[in-house]
Length: 253
Image 1: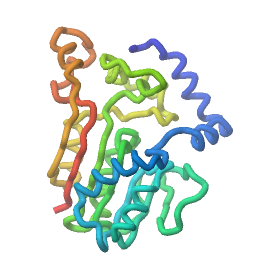
Image 2 (image 1 turned 90 degrees about the horizontal axis):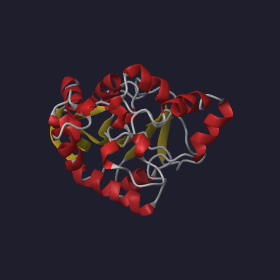
Image 3 (image 1 turned 120 degrees about the horizontal axis):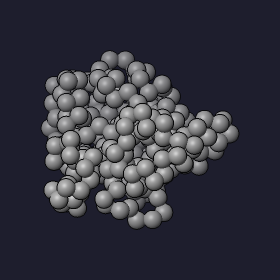
């Protein structure tokens, strides 16, 4: 798929800066789980399993988009305070029991050691400033607090009405930095293209101890790379070249 839609994506990247188009996209796009009860429950169960008891705990969810169901469920399970932070307000009505803050994608608007848990689901791959956000999550966590993140490493352009082709799932890595910026800098399809090793280093550098890093890998891509296909992946380690997503549980010791 590399370069097939290059010019079209550059054009769309510019069009999204038009205010009325941007507003329409923000309100009608898909972010988070869109409050689908089954999807919310699946995500929440993973959060809860990794978190343990939530009674009297304080929780921040980063980048919830249109979905606040995880935090509502946390309140029902006894959390004392739940907060959400995102780069814009995607919905017009937010449950009054959730403290919502909009921020610039850099410094998180909370005091040091404010939370027991920081949750995020398919958010970190969209960060424009991951080298700022990860240390910020460390700062706002209490000692012993835990960051729980599901990070999708797949090219988000493959998501759509048709089944994705496995050989295209890392197509985003075939572009230069300048090409990728021209295509995605203003759009929700932007991904920062960090790989598994990058995320591990970033968490460790920020002071976290990684206590779990579950990976889903593509055997199809592994075979293609081994047979000399997808040459743009040759500069990566096997782990970085074939990992589709990671579930990271990291603790502030």
